[in-house]
Image 1 (cartoon, rainbow, N blue to C red):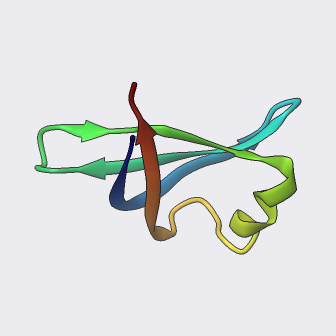
Image 2 (tube, helix red, strand yellow):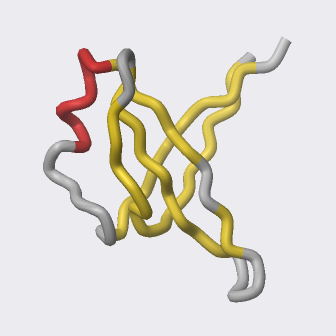
Length: 67
């Protein structure tokens, strides 16, 4: 079963490795607890983030799969 979640925050970093294009999103539920989750996109769909740059405000939707 997959659960859909959304986060809104600023792009902290965009970079690539051998297999994926990655973004690090900076968001805070309150001022004291900033978090920086990292999201990986397959290169086949990585053009989605080409229009964004570090510092842009974005909403990211993603699924978490559980057994």
